[in-house]
Length: 250
Image (cartoon, rainbow, N blue to C red; front, side):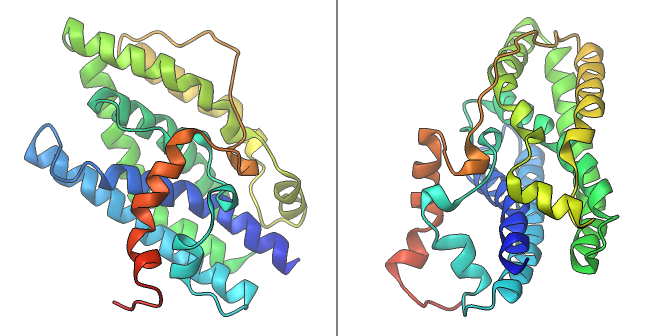
C-alpha cells in the first residue's frame, strides 16, 4: 500500500514539476512584462504544489530521501509525467496551448481529488484549486486572444492545438497503480473526466474561432516512464545544481 501510494503521488506531482520547469524557462522571455511575470508566477504556483506532494511522498516512503532528492535525483525513466507537459516552448502560442490543454484537465482532476479519503491529498487539492482556476483563466484567455486575433496569431494557435492534440488522450489513461488507489477511494478515476474535458476544450476552441482536431491518433508512454527526447534535456537543466553540488542545502 505504501509503495503504491508513493508512486501514485509521483504520477500527480511530476506533471506539475515538469510543466513548472518549462514555464520557468520563459522567465525574461515573455512577449510583455506583465505576461512574463504571469507565466513565472504560474511556474512558482506549480512548484509550490509540487513541494507539498513530494514532502508527503518522502514521508510515506520513509527511506531517508527528501523532497529535493525525489524531485531532482531520479533518472529519466523514473519520471511518470504525461508527454504533454514536457513538450518544448516552440513559440508563445504553443506554450499557451500546452498550458490550456493541461489546465482544463488539472482543474477537473483537483476538484475530484478534494474528495479523496486521504486527508493530506484532499488538503493539497483544496489549497491548489484557487491557483489552478487562475491558470485556466489565463491560458484560456490567451487561446481566445490569439485564435480570434490576427491571421498570423490564428494560424499559430491552430497549429499549436493541432500539434499538441496527440498528447491529450494520455491524461485519461490509468496505470495499474492508479486503478488500485482509485479502488481504495484515494485516487481519481481519470477515465470519468474525459468526456467533460473534451467538451470544455471544444467549446472554448469554438469560441476562439479554432477547429477541434479530428485526429484519433494519440501518443502515450509518459506514465510508464517512456518519454520524448525533450525530457532528457529538461532534466539536465533541472538537476544540474543538485548533481554538481551533492548534499547542497539552501
